[in-house]
Image (cartoon, rainbow, N blue to C red; front, side, top):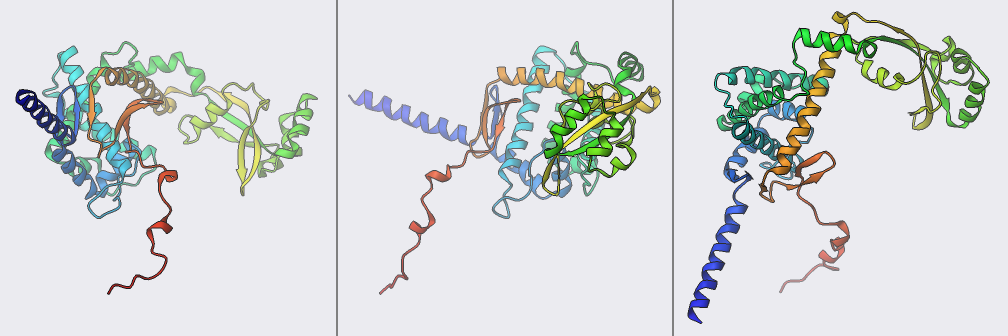
Length: 360
């Protein structure tokens, strides 16, 4: 009996020690751990640097602002940073064990690449960060910065080894452009913004053969109706090009689509019809920036598929204070710690005395 009791005590002690180790481990990938104290140091570096917060928001949209106290961070920021750390660690392990690669001198190139991507992400999200991407990296702790540059180098190498990756070289971009010229035409459009009450009449007039200009003049409330709906022309250098291209890609010239988009004006919903009226070939020199963006997105999608496969196969542990590791619609990720349902929280009136207490 004493022996059984002793074994039970030993098992209990081990369970407590394992529990403490798990709780204090921070984040772990396949047994490699970033300690809770190191994660706290990294979060502190983010919390005191508006520049670093801004660039992290650009690459991992979340709130990295202060939380409920002066020394805290919003839960979304903590979860987002934990996720970035886990992804970097998983890729690091995969590249070393499966591809036998260690960057070495490539770290200098990787640092410049990371700064460029951070700057591009900030510009794409219209963020005016108070400092440069280089200053954001400088605000990190040394181990934090080393880990991010290493993860960038290994990510670049991993992407370069994918069969679906398109090199970001001038010749490769030109080849891609030549194979997709119709995707980079300058597009002229006409629009009709139609009250929902007039959609049926609009469709009937269109079925009878009314032209784009006639439909816009009769039904559209947009100022362009005075000119038959003529709205403008958009080439690959336009900020609106991606949206215009997507909204008119399958619509024949000089025809409004059967199914409109929806829009609102002063809170009132309207049907928005967009008709391409002219498509003009664009020289590669003018389309190069758009081609580069498209190829990067294609490469990123391919890399994201591989990244999710790596994460799916990895053994991940996250301190509950940092977030919850779970599967989402876009793959495994760190979610913000779950909060109790409001239905399970007793009303505040039960926490308040019905009348002032009289202490005697």
